[in-house]
Amino acid sequence: MKPGLLSILLLVFAYILSACGQNSISGPSKEPFVVEDQASLLAALQSEGATVETAETTTQDFFSVKGQIVRVNGTDIQVFEFENAEAMENDASQVAPDGGSIGTSMVTWMDAPHFYQAGKLIVLYLGNDQSLRDLLNKVLGPQFAGQ
Image (tube, rainbow, N blue to C red; front, side, top):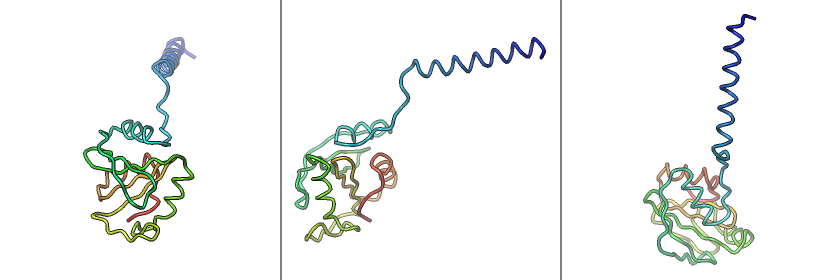
C-alpha cells in the first residue's frame, strides 16, 4: 500500500472515531418516552416538537376520574389519569369499539371520537386533525376505540 493512501485511510478512520466520540460526549442518545402518566405524556408530546399547555379540568360521567384539558398545538385533548393501570383498564373496557357507547351510556359526540390508552391514562380526542392523530399514535400507540 502506498504511504499516501495509508495516511488518508488513517485520517478518515481518525475522523470517524472522533465523530463517534463527540456524540457520546454531547449527551445520551434520544430515547423514546414511555408514557405512563400525564407528566410523561406532556414530555413525550413536547419532545416531538408539539406546543403543549394544560387548561381546565373536565368531567365525563362515564369515567371514574376527572380529566384535564390539554391543548396540543392549539387543539384540545382530554387526559384522564387513573390511580393505576388496572383502574384505567376497567374504565377503558367499557368503551365500545366505535366509541358510540360507554357502559350503558349512548354518547352523541360533537366530532369523531378517538380513544387512546397508555400506562394509567385514557386520552380522548374529538376531531379529525390527521397530524394530531398521527402525533397521538406516535406517543400513545394506536387508538383502542373510536372512528
